[in-house]
Length: 520
Ligand SMILES: Cc1cc2nc3c(=O)[nH]c(=O)nc-3n(C[C@H](O)[C@H](O)[C@H](O)COP(=O)(O)OP(=O)(O)OC[C@H]3O[C@@H](n4cnc5c(N)ncnc54)[C@H](O)[C@@H]3O)c2cc1C
Image 1: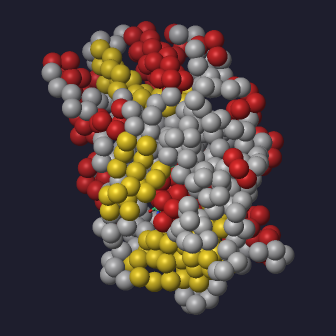
Image 2: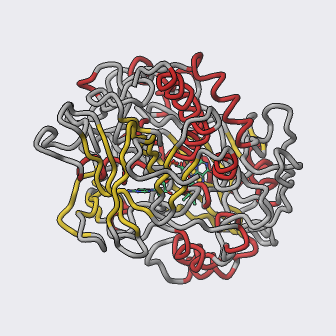
Image 3: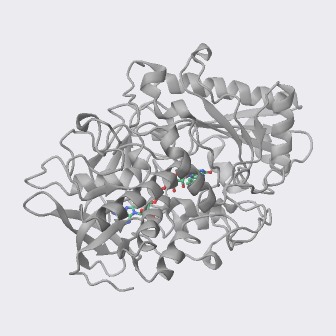
């Protein structure tokens, strides 16, 4: 559907799990939507299943800077985050892990109490009200182990991991829940266990919005999808309601304007606050919807790190679904371990070229070479845990400029002592697991550029504490919504995408209802 630029439309910025889900929820209820996506539409036959060329094909490589004491600042200074610029968003590059928040993880301020230096806050939503939306999100994604869907088979990396977990007395480990079909589901085939599908899944068994929500929204005839269209400013009328979006055609560099009656922003936790800050005006001098000064603050990226181990026999850990292996025993909050919150351990395999770059950035020497020489004998796991929100971990407009001459975002990140204590605990557990099954060598790998980008536009019950209310609607501007992972008040231990989709389904229902009742 072609929507006239002068028509006041619902404009959704970004087509990742957040944006595409909202667009589909609206269009399937008959509401026309313009979807602006900064990147191109890459189809499965176009994916390059080769790590670095695939990375160049889809990653968001526009100028960004980084400050703070986190190790990523030193190791990957020009690349603070690992995000995608393409229709489907970063989920074209995701692994597929889909666990849920635990009930108390919606209320961490009440559960953990005051943690020095942390800006913890309870979400204005709770586990009970989110339950039906989790079921809808799992059905949309096709999460294994849920809704009667079968688990994925164990690959060798998982077998090593699970045996080590068992020998250490752990009880809660499995190959899912995971967003890749074990058997045909929802028009998509079962996995062929082809591995490496971080690089885009040519088989089509892995969920991402470019294989489900976008084609279905297009089929309703109500979606005007505009790839290569990067929003650069949201404008407002004299009453302070948003009324349009300025965007650049990234191929021709031409500037366009789409009139809007509602704007939903889902550009990820870096680009969403950046756009709000770039949209400052005389009425909103600190950026749109920023009377609380919370836009861009409380940036989270999950506590991460990896443990790899070398064995004397081949594991061939790169075969099968990359991250289909979870250990959940360390998730529950147990401050006796020396930190609040908890973490998952999840299987992980990188290809040889990523492994060379990420195992020990800048590393060399015999021990490093032993690991790389033993590539086929490696097993690996990723640590993902709750990190503490901090007011000064934030996105600001830096002095560097992007290709359009616009201010590039600066990402500031300092590790919180709780994060460091949790990471050290997880490294010890990971090494213990591998040593118990005969590892010859283990390796503690530091965090990769951030793949889970959360917070920065957080939901809050009170206007002064955040940017959006419990529907993701801005406290300050009633026809402006945030629909991506940046609304996360706190991040919990689990991988975020299932929750982003669940929140976006819920927001889409609410917004459609408000529009139909003429309340917006
Ligand atoms: C290697 C890797 C593995 C991952 N594995 C998992 C996993 O196993 N489980 C999990 O839960 N999560 C995983 N993730 C994270 C997951 O991909 C993200 O949580 C999710 O995609 C975030 O959704 P989003 O809608 O908030 O943002 P995104 O998916 O990042 O989508 C944002 C979209 O907005 C577009 N955009 C940005 N700014 C503009 C603008 N100004 N104008 C127009 N368009 C714009 C971007 O191009 C992008 O397409 C992984 C990520 C990576 C990189």
